[in-house]
Image (cartoon, rainbow, N blue to C red; front, side):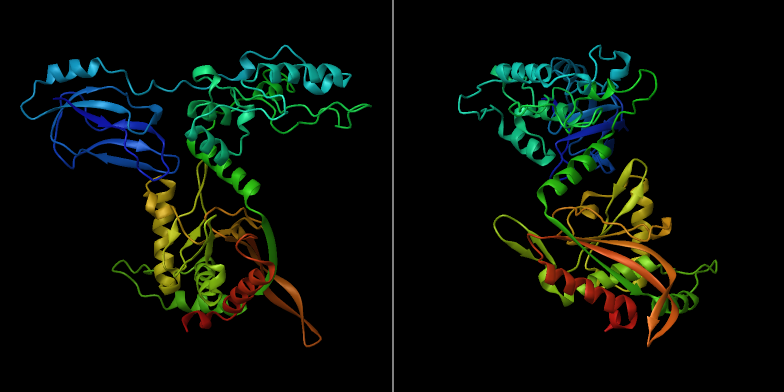
Length: 460
């Protein structure tokens, strides 16, 4: 009997993947453990190994196909002793899991004939389309609350993406909203304009030409001259970043604490440590500590000193973590990723430094494993190398905090009534107010400053 090869779930949250490359072709024999394909997730490219032995009889999903649902059949294999042609014929009868993704058609190619909504001289015409949409919406109720029929998966996906189900056009049976509709809505397809509020007397106070939230692609493109822009389709990573950070800002109540740190002692210690670093056979140092390595270590130890900040919020209860697993934002083409330094409070600066170099290299090559970037208890985002002296960062759930680190620079400070020059660095802690209150967050950033200003205390 032919063996179906399915699109694997490479992480707990994966629902679709891109079939980047086949490493075996039809007619090739494989054995258990052979790498047969490369699958792209939103964050990494991973190799898929064969589970059974046999011969690849038919490939149903060609390489380059995007958004293949998990558990869809991507190829058929003939087992040992089976007729390969018969297995291929059986596979031919099965519908392909997915068609190669078509490049999104820029709306600019078919510019909207209608003028931008802001050009309407009076509110009355703008209300009519919204009313028409309300009338067309399935199962609209007289009490003013529209009931939207949807699948459980679609409801969960819409909640994670921060999209109102009532704005999604359902293509399932009887107008039911299904998972595919939510995916389309993320890119603006099938997304209805927000329902208009009851008309009030007098003209609208919205400024002329203002872009309202939730505008469709067609409405936005109508504001610009055709041919004056280029449409660059979103890739999976950019879509995921947009969805998660939008959900974070909408669902996580952020507050921010900023503090200045004198890192003069840290810079002196860093210079001494790097100067004393042992050399390899090629006389290259075995490690080179950066300021960011000190930041990671200090944040990890600070969480151990203030354990009530080393938490994750869940609706059922607070998760209090035993170890400080610190995510570190790494920029990569098309987005960013946060590999995790596990048990960072227990690791030396040289170990943290070498782990980060390895993570950064593999992150840019999209070779990180899901367990290397999922989870964590906090994160560090450092833009100091770009000359940024202050910024705020968005929390990446399930973290309850993230530390934004600015550049170190010489600043005048007053000590004992005298003005002196010191190497100062500003850091801003973003906190999830559900899990960390203001005073508790102040304790955490205070503990961090004490450690970063006195790095020898990290070793105690």
